[in-house]
Image (cartoon, rainbow, N blue to C red; front, side):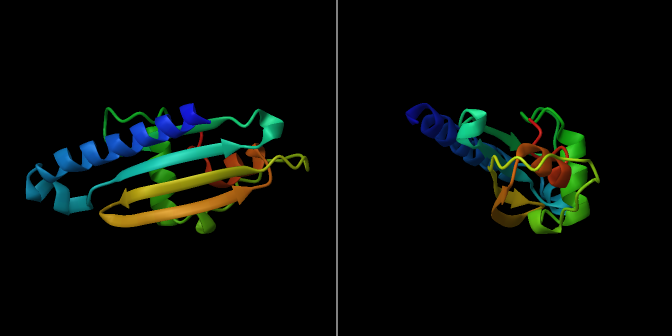
Length: 134
């Protein structure tokens, strides 16, 4: 439990470190599309070993998200709204193993704080695509 907490705090601190350096960028670069710095977390249920994962998505080279381009495209198509993301049509089982996802930070300069629970990881991936696939 404490390991997850410290990992989360470290990611949160890195978000502020990134935000501080992003403000030092030239105004023309940051005003064209707005700054993006999102902390993404996934908490699996005890059925899936209570795993906790987190990453930072900036939509720029060098961020820690392994599927950055697809994740950013998915967020752009939904306006960074978890409720607006539609399922991709894959078949998922009816096994109930809840997965809670959270997204907070800034999307194109606008503050974001969303939490959503899906019935299992297949349904979560079907709705969110690459966003929480890390």
